Image (tube, rainbow, N blue to C red; front, side, top):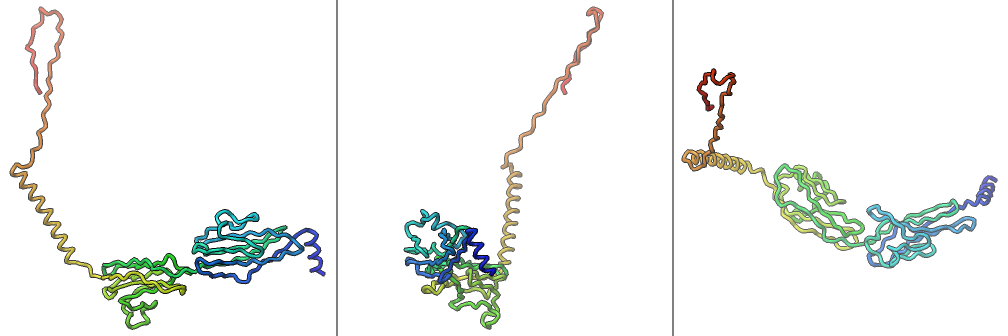
Length: 292
């Protein structure tokens, strides 16, 4: 009885419930081929639903593909919407991401998300390996494949031998204290030692094509050159002493220009004239000027 009452209420108020489904939530195709993403939906009570498609790329940016009954401008050349699905005529690696099919109308709503992966074999990875480092320093080697889809994983090699993820479990590598991340391609030496010297290269793989190797680089680990530092300090001190001696000798021989002597300023003082009244009764005294 309760179910019947609910159905009557829904019908009376015009509320329609939608359901959407897909045969698979993941689609994988090779780059350049077509891809179909299915979105089957049902609408109760004969409703006419509104269908929209959204795309979210690997960077998190989201955009409409099918909106207001038509394919949006950026996707018109390669995308087609049809009853129950969305098709890409010729995929590129930029099409990898999540596609959301939204069905809505008259207070009903449903959605499904389909993940599309456009398969791209790995490319030659770009690696950064220092050629000369000092013992005890933190050293980071990096490796990255910008093309592989799904994203590549990485393996590092030293002198042609693959490095295990945990060196402590292998006698041949127990003296090495590195950290290797197969997901991002980093090989880190928290405190590099002379035993870590060798020829290194990395390898990218994603099971969609042949593995690709980066350039081989010789990394040399050297001790701190204490003797060189001391010799450098001594040479610097000798150079300063020689410079000081040269300045002293040049001044003594008069080779350096003398500093101009400051001119003394003179001031003239004149005794003020005094008024004694009648000039006939006044005894004129000698006026004197003083030079200070």
